[in-house]
Amino acid sequence: MLAIPFVFPMMQQARDLSQAAEAQGMAQAERAGERSDGVEVAPGDRAHAHALPISAPHWYVTVHGDEGALAQVFALDGSGKVLGPVLGPLPASEPPLAELRSMAVLGNGDLAVVSAKHDATRVLAFGRPDAATGVRPFRATWVAGGPSNPAMVHAYQVAVGPSGALYASNQDTNTITRYNGLGTKDAGKPMPVASGLAAFGTLAPGTVVPNDQQSPEGLGLVRGFAFGPDGLLYVCDRGRSRVAAHDPDTGRLVRVAMDAREGLEHPIQVMFTPDGARMLVTDNKANCVWSQQLGTGETRQLVAPGDGGLNAPSSIALRDQVLYVGSRLGKQILKFDSKSGRSLGVFAELPSNPEFLVPVEQQ
Image 1 (cartoon, helix red, strand yellow):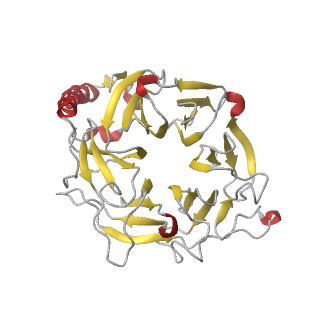
Image 2 (cartoon, rainbow, N blue to C red):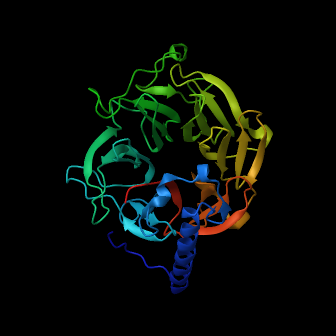
């Protein structure tokens, strides 16, 4: 991997070595079917990716930064050590990477990355990593903001939907938009406005969920989103203190899944457990992680405010029974038992505020 232009203090290096040794022991126990990062793991709960060596890239993370060294995707090994940047150079015709946010590992192994600088907002595709360096070569700009795509400004998250279309949440327009998938005739172009939104007037191309100035069902301050096991689009609305479920075909609001009545304040990112039983939400004002049982609607604080040093939670990811949460102001990735919420300590120390964390499985 490439070297990165910052150096951790000696104490952190010692902690990295200690964590690596601990993780190697845990990896041996996992292979025996016993534990994962201090959590008892049933054989059916273990993830395929743990066949990777501990020193291989296990995670990608983006951190808050404008242009320059921090406008990159960084690889983390299985112990949380920062290995280095993974995005190869851009052509001279491309604006520089700036304000990287969401990532999505595509079905063919490529990586889609959001560069969210306002008037240069775009989604770029990078190829599979080089076997020797781990660096991914630039492939193409998949989607770009501009006159033909005015809703994509300061995009926050992207995700590939069930049909292969790309969905994006856009902070400056407070919308969810949709684009033709890679490999299609009109790849990257906005798809038609969702079929149920005609009553709300002329909307920007690609609009799936409008903002609250365009529709009473719309978004106040959008952040992350995820497709639920029911096929609905669950959207974090920081401005309205809620997670709302929308029909991705019609764009219409189906229900409010969680809101201030449960204690929700500023939802940032949302995900669903692999068994489809629970929805997990980071809340950077309540400073906690919420868990909702989808079958009953029961909602509780899975990770209590400030637990484990949590300070403004951002990213959220799950592997085996370990929940990884970005502590944005703490510049850390923290670990928790995904069932009990028990703190399992610090996983990674970062050079800046974590934005998104995604698991990777390639060596």
